[in-house]
Length: 286
Image (cartoon, rainbow, N blue to C red):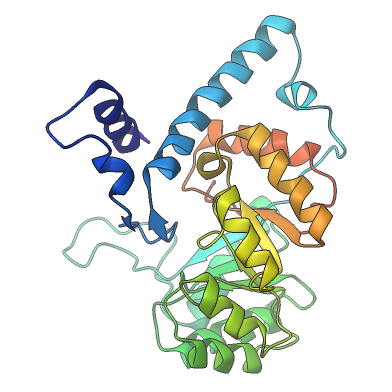
């Protein structure tokens, strides 16, 4: 996270702003991924990058895999889910079309999932929603359920819905979704949804630091936390979160941070060491 690194460097080395300005600059994350942004969250992202690199170097020096440095693996394979997106076949302004084709309706989403399954062997699927009207996205999930019976399905509108809309979708997809991810954008609104539906709720937005855990767990706002070593401060902090989830009976999986191969490898190593990882992890890769 180069932007975070530069911001942190300014705070440490001095800049034109008053002392502590960065710490006081709590704002909504422009990417819509982590709720309220803060200096502490930026620090964790920066620390994570260094921790992963240091663990990799240490493992090479000792001739050990990173999972061994984290306490040892409890599984030999880590399951990942395919990440499905609504997409054009080419940029609207023109340009070369790619060979994946458009995915703007249920048939297109199913075709995208079929390619992931046939080419890479994915057996669970997550649809990034909050794009079209809820009924259109409900139809896409139902089409996936028909095309891939018995396969776990997730829907993630990135906090775009109101509580009534989230409950509307949950009611119509009860028994179809493995979980509904971040239907609303805050711990309080997630708790309101959870109180009125049996569909499990997952988050990687309102719980991304240890400080955000107590309220979420106390209000039963989330049933599954999607950890992300980029956000939480590295692989050791991810294991701390996993221990908290086990203690309080909250499920755990892992969020994809638009990563490429190095981050995916780090994520796989820490996932191999976490007991009770009952859900396939997210992946943007391939």
